[in-house]
Length: 403
Image (tube, rainbow, N blue to C red; front, top):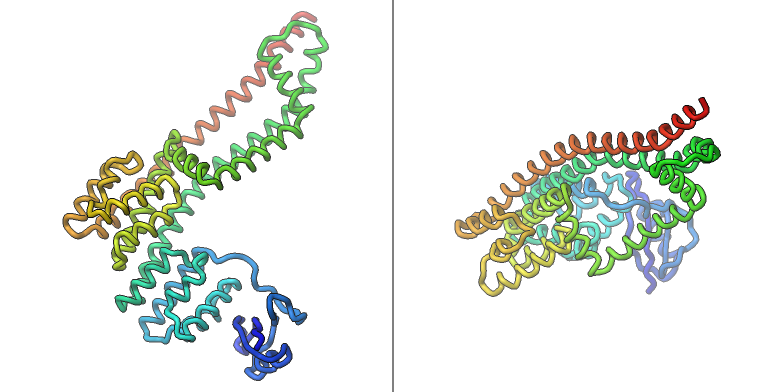
């Protein structure tokens, strides 16, 4: 019997999706309409049935959506609301249309006898392995509501961290971009007009002026080549970083950059400490927790270090052994982790370390913002001053000779 995928609107206004078996398209339509559902679209075998509806597969599921979902589901689970009913209530309240579809598919899977974590694993790009592993541990321990609440708290911390860093970098990036565009336009349109009289005077020009005129002429003649080269380099860089060797090389280089390298390093350490702590607290075995955390960190250099640590742990060694030998991890981190393993409080120590390095990031971001502003002004001063000197000094000599 054919299976039809549908999107429908209930009388309450909520949109839901699912599958229905029927001998024909019209029969599937009747089955849905008998349940007082308004059919928005009906699909068989990947081809549209022709009934026009709203396209709700637009956008993506954001971290904020998952945080709200986790908090609300936690409240309903603690209030002993059945999981299927709770998911359907959340689907009706969710504004992200594509997330509504995922939640309804999850509700249908759970209604069919599947565990919540197993259903989520079918949507691992939405929830992620870290989230699914924690939900599974909550199901096993019978503390799913606490785990969901804890996940929401940790995701909010990660979201706040990324937001603070992005917010601090918006102003410098905007200024640098503006300087580049203005400088490019000046070299193409303004400088040639200002230096034309100097060239026509026939006098010997200073080396700085010759360099400025030569650069301006090149940019005016080959501006298309420069823009194409920049776009091409960006494209090649992105292609290179998609290869295994490129990712490892770039991720290693990021933590060794001057000024920004330390910031990147602390960001990855916070991700590791927070993720590993959360998984251990949820009762996930250390080797599995390390494997999941290696993906949460989102850096190939750290991922390799963490995966190598798994081998040491499986051979009976301490988690902190390889960390203490690596320059990717601060000595304080490995020493504190060693103490945590000895005292049996590794999860709480990792949580405190994550909070400590998070505060360090805040202070570094504030310091970098204060440092970048004068650096930008200095670069602008040197650039404008050099341009003025290259043009005005020869013009002054020309005026003197004419006088």
